[in-house]
Length: 179
Image 1 (spheres, rainbow, N blue to C red):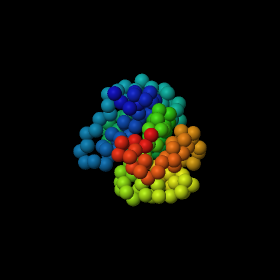
Image 2 (image 1 turned 90 degrees about the horizontal axis):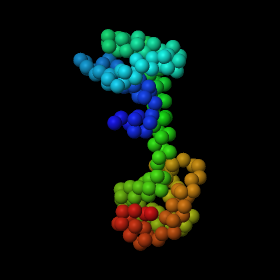
Image 3 (image 1 turned 120 degrees about the vertical axis):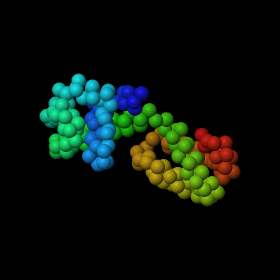
Image 4 (image 1 turned 135 degrees about the vertical axis):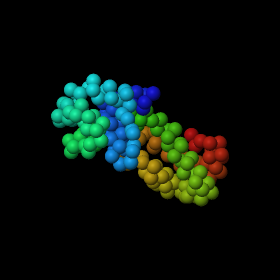
């Protein structure tokens, strides 16, 4: 099962991405014999009218022929492949973020942070007053791609972490979770 099927992502974008990767490999690697997946090939041909509309006149049949004949893609083909790649990644990101268990992810981040150097990292957080603990924890979350927007789940988790003392935090770490 492909990631696009699993997540319900637009199959046209995945098919164009498959074409993009294969085309790039054929042009760059000597004697590369990459072939577009059969499903991708079928999607591209079946959806040629949708592709023509969505990608401002991209003739996907012509693009496939150019790929199969080891020709360099046109500017329109490159621009369309870049757009499809961006759309594909954006859609996957959005679907994964919607499915993310923020509390479990937050717990995992703190656990991994501490794992890199248990004594130093626990001291970095738990040898401080509550306001500094809170600031340090927020900085850790920012470092691991949490944005500045407030999130009730993350805020509550941070407050629970702030309430811990060094010994309790060390015990929770040894148990494998700060939740």
